[in-house]
Length: 214
Image (cartoon, rainbow, N blue to C red; front, side, top):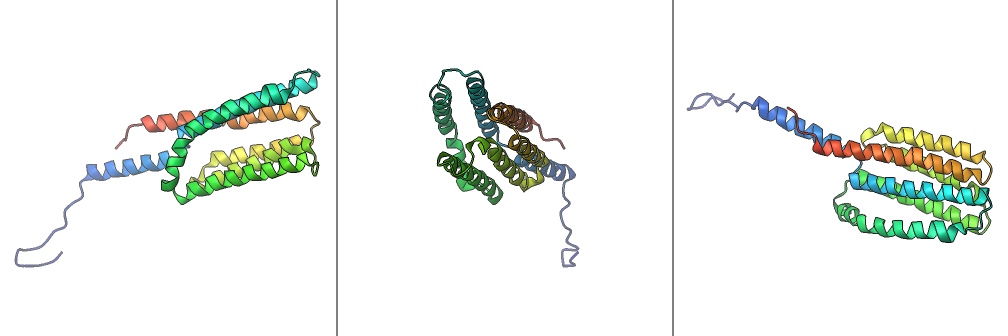
């Protein structure tokens, strides 16, 4: 308090309602930042369903000695159609990149690194440097790495549980025989990617519609 000719100068009191409103909006903003963007969860859920379907179809073809060419009639059409849809909807993500925080860039870089590592392993399998039948297990290991690092920003515990699930799945797949690894991988993709993506999507929608409570 400062004395002067005009008497003591008093600091303006903070309006309690305004203070609670700002705190509530800040809490809501932080909660929404922890959520996975809905359009990304839709892509993850969509790709998970496609991948699970293709793996299960490929297992059935090999298991029952079907004359169908799985690469031509299952994988190529699914990947082409899904890729076109992904490119169309992923434009929104590219628009967000310049404004994305460092944590978001780290997560994206991690998934790009995991995808690149799997591509290297796939090429090694093509040249018979490693056992191609172990690729599903290697993919599960990389999925666990990606989920674990994804859960570090914002302390998202759900992603760390998903990472543990993928690593346990990798241990299981390393000890399974071909072509049963395809059916097991289809199951793991559905339970560890499709179902969690659906949960994240509906959680994000609820957070977007949630009113600010004071």
